[in-house]
Image (tube, rainbow over all chains, first blue to last red; front, side, top):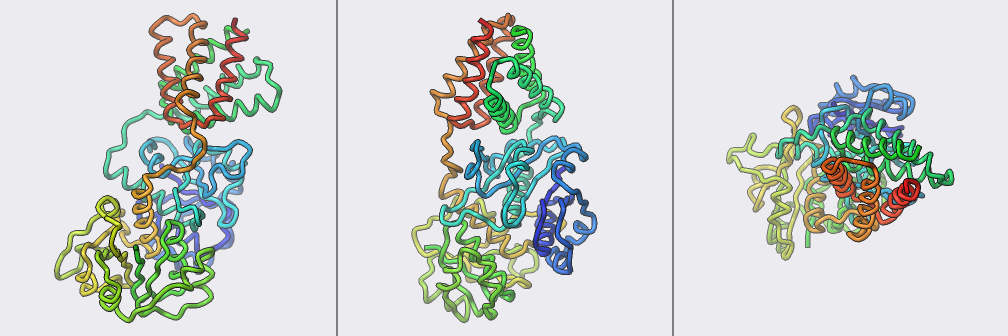
Length: 231
Length: 231
């Protein structure tokens, strides 16, 4: 199941534009996080996709949604990847995303506020960040135009090439792995901030690499052995 | 030179949305055929692409524009290719267009009215018709969303797509990291084939994750500490 998540939309019309382009590419599950009031403009711009607006669900925060809906893989979107973060984060392209995404579990495609995008904290909750390659003179797309490109790439890839059965690791499997890693890091005499940094880098690498269940198992084995050896 | 042609736009805001997404993908020449009045909304929606609105040019008919500006190759767009025309016409995809378009001469990318699209007569003036693959439940995109997908495909193909010059780790940096990992694996009492397997899984994960130089450095740090701790 693919959920489309719009975090704190500010402009009623944009929710409608988003619903319309979702339906254009076969998506139907719209989640709004703490949205503005829905208005006539919302329904008007959705055109023949009104049922998506009617059926939408709301949560207070992105974290609450991810937890309560058992999301296995969260995809954040940003127009400024690697710009202003302490830890620069490599964004993948919509094409990369489409090629590697395995739509077996619960996937969230997350779009940020019109003005400010997703916060660093929200991006931290994502397994991967996707960014659309643009001309340097004006890299920031309107949010629903960015969404349409990502939906289009996913739709196109699904149609043209049958998605490989990649047996992507579940959320549990990935978290199990990360716990082992953190456990090892705790025993390496890192200064606190360096340990945190190392943990984040590892987590992001896991997110971007689309590891399979078997790979998660093997990696866990490595860190279990390391842990046993250290203690 | 690529011209973006909007035939008889009806909604002032859409001209602005079109200008914005043109600039997002490095296009600048906007032609309006017999447009509605430009209003505040036009400039507002163009955001940081106002100069495209200021510099636009107008013609009375598509035919007049094509003739007077020496267009070598006219690309029409339609959401209903082959649907209701007397002369059914096979549309190509944006991807096909991007692959085959040669941006040497004067090219026109032509978008139709919001409601009715391009007329059969106008489509007859085009060398090729492009249509975006969509879900059958709702094949008609908003016009500026359709345009953004076509611009994106052209831009992507032209650039060949290096996303962010985010300092991707060099081959040396990645190999340095893998050597540390192998060093650690050598000390974990793995049976030989299992060690080899673990090493391969790790290497593949690194390959797929597009890690940066800084991330490679951090990961190397983890394995150096582990090695020192084990020995």
